[in-house]
Image (cartoon, rainbow over all chains, first blue to last red; front, side, top):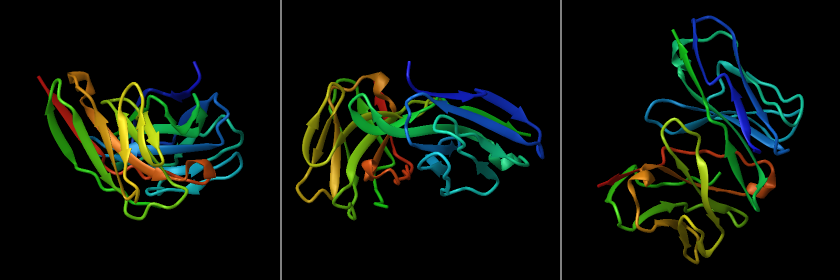
Amino acid sequence: IAGITQAPTSQILAAGRRMTLRCTQDMRHNAMYWYRQDLGLGLRLIHYSNTAGTTGKGEVPDGYSVSRANTDDFPLTLASAVPSQTSVYFCASSGWTGGRYGYTFGSGTRLTVV
Amino acid sequence: LAKTTQPISMDSYEGQEVNITCSHNNIATNDYITWYQQFPSQGPRFIIQGYKTKVTNEVASLFIPADRKSSTLSLPRVSLSDTAVYYCLVGDEGSGTYKYIFGTGTRLKVLA
């Protein structure tokens, strides 16, 4: 089934550790995104990529970095995790799917920084 | 980027029609209006999209007035499983450069 695959599904991470959240899509969408969603709140854009080889900053980019070496993969790295980065992280892509243009989201990665 | 405003929360009873209105006063000519639904612990999923007038699919209807400064998502005969957060988004999705700002959405609670 075409879509977004995120890994891991959940993780408990010690503060100060480095962590990479993985995101892969099989829809050949050009644009990809990373959002974080804190408990009971809306989604906030961290970083985005309009096409392979380019990235941009969203609303809350500090403490995060991304890369887009190819169309399918868009990893998110926390260089030195802090407790305030405890959140659910969603990867998404946008493009034509099923006859309409819009977002497709992954199932999320639940990250707890202790 | 077009900013959207929608109610923070709504309650309804099973079997009722629910209408959620979104304001987007600075919508641009090329912008489409898209609604997403998010259940707890899941990513948002597409519900419906439109540019003007009325759009209907198997899940919902979307009403857009002529000035396009607002839109209304209509959910017919809601059930408990429609309890979710609904997001209204506006943007030129085909431009390839658009990045969505989701906001807080409308939290719909359907009561038995």
